[in-house]
Length: 177
Image (tube, rainbow, N blue to C red; front, top):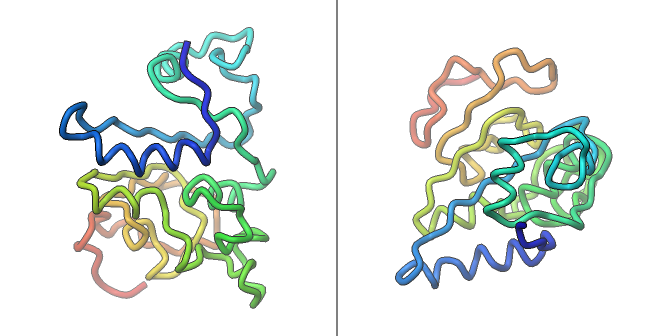
């Protein structure tokens, strides 16, 4: 069975993992956020339904047991991506800019993402799915530490205006929206 770990301990451990890479190698880090899923909907957390692939990932890794879910997609993503309370990350209330530091509708410049912290340590970072924590250029995944971003082309979020036909690799995003 996998070891249970809190979000804060996980983020602290990833920072320390770089020091161990010479002897143990760097660990692979996979974080999954699934919308509309309850804590006990996965087999590794006690579901009656087998979720074999996710259970296999959890068996060989670390699992969050005390992650705070903000009950809405953008604040929860902000907390997972930065390891901070969603208001500290700048996404206090979804993706609209309310003119307050905690409610800018985009990740705060002071909120470093996990990807932003891992890139300088030599990690390749990838994001897939929905972003929804900053729709304007300068606040996209590639601006926040991700090397590549794979977005759902049929995302129904009308607030996101990223042109999905552009290459989504660091250094290759060109043109205006």
